[in-house]
Amino acid sequence: MGRKSNGLATAKSLVRRHKTALWKDKAWMRRTLDLKRKSDPLEGSSMAKGIVIEKRQVEAKQPCSGMRKCCVVQLIKNGKQISVFMPRTGAQKLIDEHDEVIIECIGGKKGRAKGDLPGIRWQVIKVNGQSLLALLSGKIEKARK
Image 1: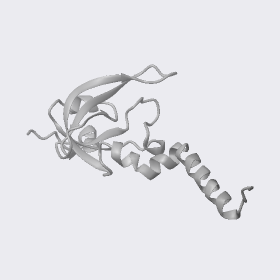
Image 2: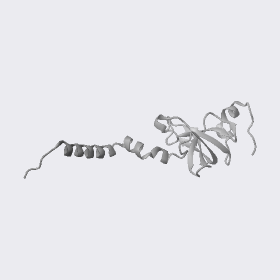
Image 3: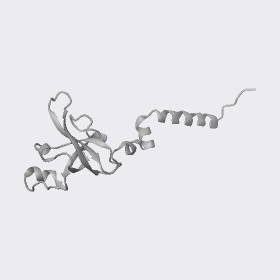
Image 4: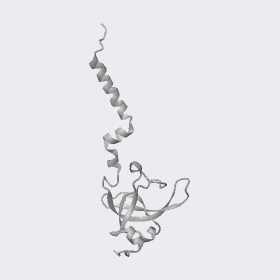
């Protein structure tokens, strides 16, 4: 007795084949499992508060050979430690260890690192509740805590 091939059986096999093909698509899988939010240290928020643990210099990617000023910040909300960029000239002099800073995303493509900074996705915008740009321009002095 031969097996009949009806439209229903072929439709089921097509759906099954389509589902397995979807799981091989990395973008679809990340979107479906919500992996970006789960791996994000800021947990979906645009800014976060943290404490400066140490200051360091990161070497820029090829072909540049400069040293970029960065610091390691421990987030208050979940205790995770991340590397953060200190923008502009002289920012490393204003940011000391154990300062309270507010960080935001640098704004690279798809939430990734921007420019020649390998693995650094965030930057400092406030130090001890005061704007870093105002401190750098000399409009205000750094507060003592």
